[in-house]
Length: 287
Image 1: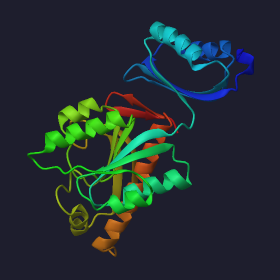
Image 2 (image 1 turned 180 degrees about the vertical axis):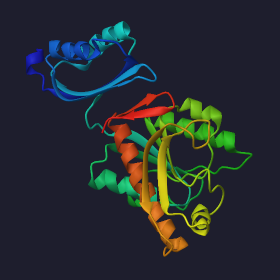
Image 3 (image 1 turned 90 degrees about the vertical axis):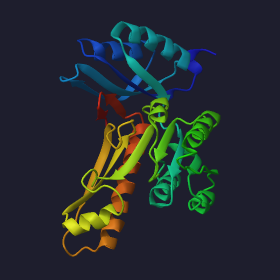
Image 4 (image 1 turned 120 degrees about the vertical axis):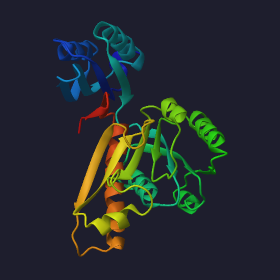
């Protein structure tokens, strides 16, 4: 079949490389040579790291093999790290949770109702409280208990599921266990966590009660990539709500959960749409 008869595919290309003149020209020229029509393009040069970042959406009739071969050659020339995917392809996602259901429910609902581009292939939990919710949405549920003595076996089981289900993204949706350094390295850049932004000021149990006791005026949440440094991975998204003295602890918990849902959903969407690129300990997010 000739390329002229192939139905055009809408691709998303994201890349990073050392900044230098001619990158945009080279990328656009390559896509034009392959008959591509750019529909969206964003770029950023970071003067601090000296890196250049770019995200392009393009329609092209050229097969993936031709695009990949051309990009490999260009990548060698410019020292690029790049990825190519079909726009809107659902990313195979595994969600981990413990007992709180608000983030899991929100992601599953958005996947159904708002075209959140993820395919929720499994829910993994160290408790059974989320099993009915997973069943409601038709998501396979895996109970993987975790104790100090079984932590290594539990993480090995998680990695087995990641491999068996071809998981591309793991979301910690209020999963109340700390991942080991080895697991963080094995899944580097593929795990997103959500936590209340009171950390590290209000550590331990009942952070909203601690915040209420201190009379905070802002509550918030942070979605970030997971690294071996607890809650210090590259930040993808943050959100806040203003509060005042009239709010009870229960009000802060409800508002906090809503902020967590919003921040996590945006982070997951942007990651699945290849809008997030790592810049050392920071992220570049093309919205």
